[in-house]
Amino acid sequence: MTRVPLGRTGLQISPLVYGTLPLGPLQARLSAAEGGKLIRYALEQGVNLLDTAELYGTYEHIRHGIAGFSGEVLIASKTHAADATTARAHVERALREMGRERLDIVHLHGARLQQPFVERSEVFAELLKMRDEGKIAQLGLSTHYVCAVYQAAEQPDVEVIHPLINRQGMGIIDGSADEMATAIAAASQAGKGIYAMKALAGGNLIDKAREHIRYVAGLPGVDALALGMTGTAEIDANLALLTASGEDEEAWHKLEQRRRKLVIMEQFCKGCGACVPACTNDALQLVEGKAKVDEENCILCGYCGAACPEFMIRVV
Image 1 (cartoon, rainbow, N blue to C red):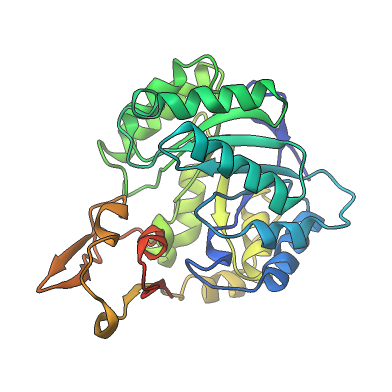
Image 2: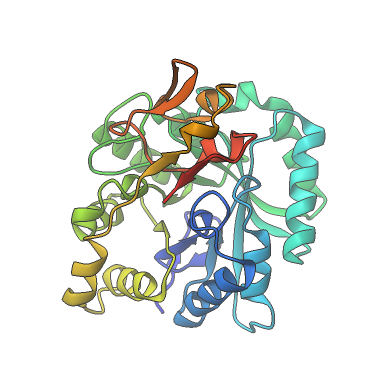
């Protein structure tokens, strides 16, 4: 498969990045073995960058997928830690559970951080130490903020940015799709590697998936695109689309007919409110003591499910 440079990192990556979030407990709840088979299939087709995070619960899926694979595998993870000790623990767990000596990219998981390098200065300093120790190769920022992309572009120690962008601008906290696209182009010009996320807004834009994927992949400065995939048909279709090797119209017709939604099992909801601040898009609120979702604003990330102490929220 054709490789593309990830900014000035020196890494050469596939145009399709495997977003592993949907494989785990926040969404499809595939077993580690089931998810590992899909990851292995994608690797065998030429995908070489896997995107995960402390929150996703997919380290074991990745370990299954890469076990015995002789080709190149790059792994990007994220820490949402608010302090240095927790950040180090997150990175150490990722290394241990995936059987790696070094992570290729570690992002500040800053979806809702307007000033990530101020609000998480202690965490960033600890990640720099771990880079110096050889446990991290490149540092990055995962963000839903336009302003944070500009801030990352000015940070010499940040080499990769993982921004939210889709044609409708769904999930962008402080601007439009055009404004985020402009920020991405500026960051790329500054030498940062860019692999985008949420091209389909978590599945909300699935009915015209090809149109939306092409839009993001074609933006100036976007090196690659992370997409969540829970079946081989999705992997094949996305690879064909992003490598211009032809499209299977029948397969895409089936994929674009699918629908996803956030389900809250209200009869078991205790109204604790833990899910509300976990939402990156202000799509949750408590109404009469129960969590309610605003479906128009929900980008189906599943982070609220991770925050629910009763495990009563699912993306299905």
